[in-house]
Image 1 (cartoon, rainbow, N blue to C red):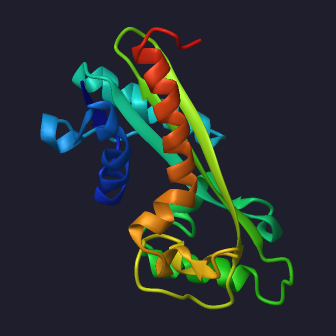
Image 2 (image 1 turned 135 degrees about the vertical axis):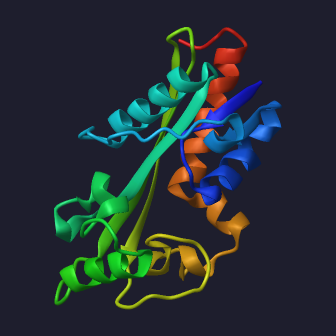
Image 3 (image 1 turned 120 degrees about the vertical axis):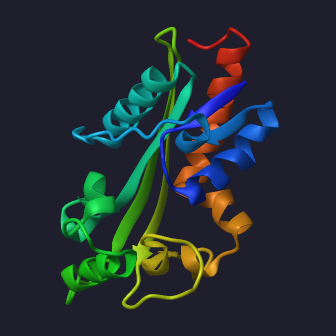
Length: 199
């Protein structure tokens, strides 16, 4: 089976492929099937945004489409940046400027607790959907650490690992990350769906 990833992010493609190839599913980018869908992310939740993206790309391609909406929820920022993580601080900022905004917002804050959330939705042409949610709790560091990863990874510390996401290998990160957890749950649900036992 072929699925279109409703994202232009090659990092996400790599993560999705690593898990879904185990089910014999080929994941391709929108550009691979000749579409470029811009979706207005108007949802109030990660679940709503993932469904909006998956449905739009499914309609544009006629193929099952998989989308993930994810972000960083920081307790002391009232759960922000949340669904606005990718566009925190407005358009035109890069990853470093965005995570610097989070660090600035936590200046003087002792509560550094945060969690990464990922919601995955696969929309099928027959109207069916398979969904899953994953979370990874952690702390916000006082300064960036590590060279790998993307987005907010350099400031997100996983206490039991004593490393930020940006200090982990891809394998280490995928084993515990919000998207890794969501993908594992999604894989189980998708397997049930493909076997006809999905509720």
